[in-house]
Amino acid sequence: MNLVEQTLGNELIEDIVTRTVDELTPRGLFNFNAPRQTLMGEGAILKIGEILSKLDVSHVLVVADRVVHEKGLMRSMERSLERAGIACTIYPAITQEPDETVVASATELLTRNEADFVLGFGGGSALDAAKAIALAGSSQSSLHQLAEPGFSGRRVVGLGAVPTTAGTGSEVTDISVIMRADRLHKFVIKKADLMPDLAIVDPGLMLGLPPKVTAATGIDALTHAIEAYAARSSHPLAKALAICAIQSIAEALPVVVGNGGNRAARLTMATASYKAGLAFSNSGLGLVHAISHQIGPRYRLAHGIANGILLPYVMRFNALVCQREYAAIAHMLGVSHSGMTEREQCMASIDAVRQLLADIGLPENLAGTSINRDDFSSIAIEALQDVCIGDNPRDVTEADIVQLLEEVSGSKEKV
Ligand SMILES: NC(=O)c1ccc[n+]([C@@H]2O[C@H](COP(=O)([O-])OP(=O)(O)OC[C@H]3O[C@@H](n4cnc5c(N)ncnc54)[C@H](O)[C@@H]3O)[C@@H](O)[C@H]2O)c1
Ligand SMILES: [Fe+2]
Image (cartoon, rainbow, N blue to C red; front, side):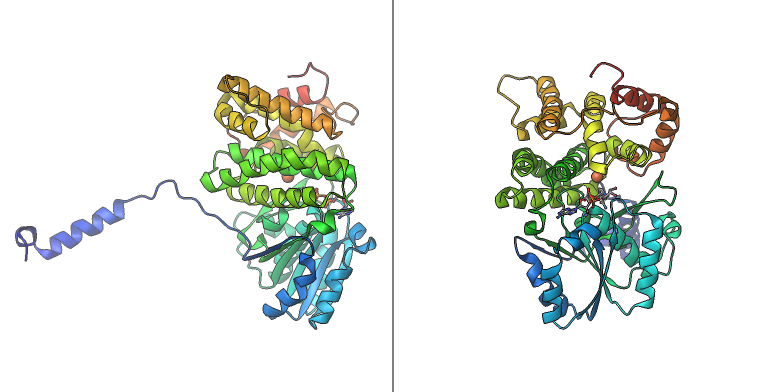
């Protein structure tokens, strides 16, 4: 027995140690969630039968984009599943930005069907529908229940995702975005069980994506990366993925818009979208998405288009608190030179984003849409309740959002 033990006694020491441990608080922790398995590269889809066989899957419900199905992009998957002896039911009814009615009918199909695995196949719309169907179907819940904060239902079927656009990163996020029946509002549902178990990323499936969709979806990926990099809850792992994605998108997006058949650039974009998805799913987004979730449905703007329009305006607004982050982004966008101050680099990054939008033919503001000034206040109130708002790096008020909408509407001078 040493001197301390002799003086204090073992029980007292034990008590002090217990109380000290109880008072310790962990600091700076972050979670990082990702699919258990990813297969990436051209031709990856040919391996799906083999992979699902190893997971003991017997019947797959494929929730598919209608256009992707009609184009015959699912043939390799069907053949691969057939060769592996896995039954397959295809639900090829997903069109852009699916709503709760289509999700509800596929959920019913899953309940009737013997499927033990749900596979989303298409752009973000099909993947998000598949994710919601897998969770709602296997927990016998409605989308409204899923969206409730205290929802505790669990997914008991497997879930996989095969993206055919390089944009949303939905194959690696725990988020599903579904339009409400009124098609004016969106459910943005974030739950651990929405994270797919398997992501198969095959850029060969993206070679025929039209230039306009390539541009809009690619800008969505850039927005994810920039918002994730600057988000309040960002952390080193998310930042590393995000900054790397920004560099890749700046290099490859103009190439895939101008030459959709460029296989190397398609792979770069698919990988960048995946990285940006992982980054934001684990760190959060910000004001671009908070507003875009409101104006997209109201003014019938595709998600990527709405984000692209908002991105430089929101960056200008956030620059007050993100000078360092945006300066780092300027390096990745190739517009930072020695001798520039941090503020100059920050502003250069915003100009570079604006230039990229112009180069790939996306609109710079909302002029030409049916935007209505009378909506601005309610859009602002709804944006302040959006799940993405809490991670915006700068505090935001209703008046700030109304001001931004004034600028974005094209009625005021450019920022
Ligand atoms: N879950 C998430 O983390 C997340 C993140 C961002 C956005 N979203 C949501 O994703 C949806 C948007 O997804 P998206 O941008 O990928 O667009 P999308 O899935 O709506 O597809 C856009 C268009 O491209 C077509 N298409 C898709 N792949 C094609 C291909 N390979 N060849 C030819 N045509 C093809 C589709 O038929 C559709 O007409 C929105 O609902 C958005 O809110 C989800
Ligand atoms: Fe997005």
